[in-house]
Image (cartoon, rainbow, N blue to C red; front, side):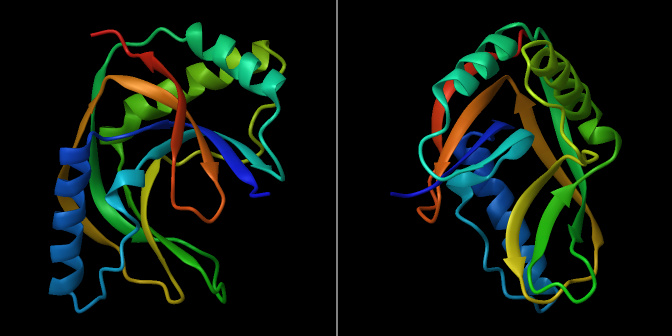
Length: 181
């Protein structure tokens, strides 16, 4: 049986994901880097990661997460990226290459904070790590130099609960919650 990851996320529509992939590919090629991107269909910004489960995620956890998410009321918002960055500790063998941003992702941080508050009220543990919103593009054995970018994001009009079967490069959306216009 395949294990699963469970997380809340913001996802671009297919056209936006393709636009991001094309812009990132061109930027990589211009710098002599191989643009081995993850499939654009799984591009997302994680809002809350529940973890890895050996089997199907617990139905009670999904119910608590869904109840908490239904209590989050936020307006739709525009999000933007302002730099490419390569993360990872020195000596690491896997470096995530990401799109991230400052003020252009502030509304993402606010949404994430509101979601975490509601999850805690429903008995779900708070994350142990600080949160830096990002969209992971690829992984590499070597880090790359960061560079600024002018890359519009998208209008976030909903957030979703995703179950991802390990090793299948697939994200199954379990539920959706609108961000009110």
